[in-house]
Each structure stands twice: as structure tokens, then as C-alpha cells.
Image (cartoon, rainbow, N blue to C red):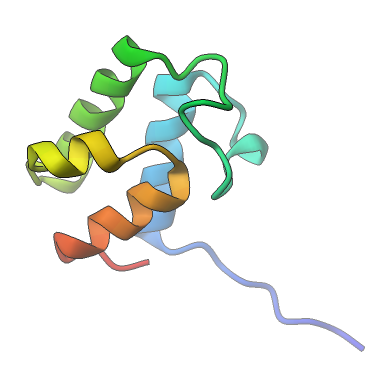
Length: 87
């Protein structure tokens, strides 16, 4: 039995690249569970750099509540959905 290969959307790749670059993590370590309180390189300074990089990559400007709520890769995807970014 073979399983279809699931291709990563352009937006998924873009977001993964941002997380890799800002948090200095290899791509294979980026998943929904990557979180502020569980990732050594994700401190308050990295958080603001991550927000800025996401805003730039997706040409948006997250509101303050979203900046505060974005505490994981999975949550970032959910928040981006509010701005019309689909995965």
C-alpha cells in the first residue's frame, strides 16, 4: 500500500522558513509543538523578531493581541488564518 505524498503549501514553507531563520532551528524540528516556553532559542527578543519576520513575509501587521497570543508554530498558523493566509 502506498500513501500519497503531502506537499507543503507555499505559505507553509514560507512560515517554516521564518521560524527556521529566526529561531535558528533545522526545518525538520519545525512542527505545531514548537512553542515559546519549550524552545530554547525563542525568548522575548526572538519573539519580536519572529513577529516582524512573519509580518514582512506575509505582508500583514498583526495586532497586539495576536502578537501576545502567538506562542507556538501551530498558533501562528491559526493567527495567520485571521489575516487571510491559508495553509
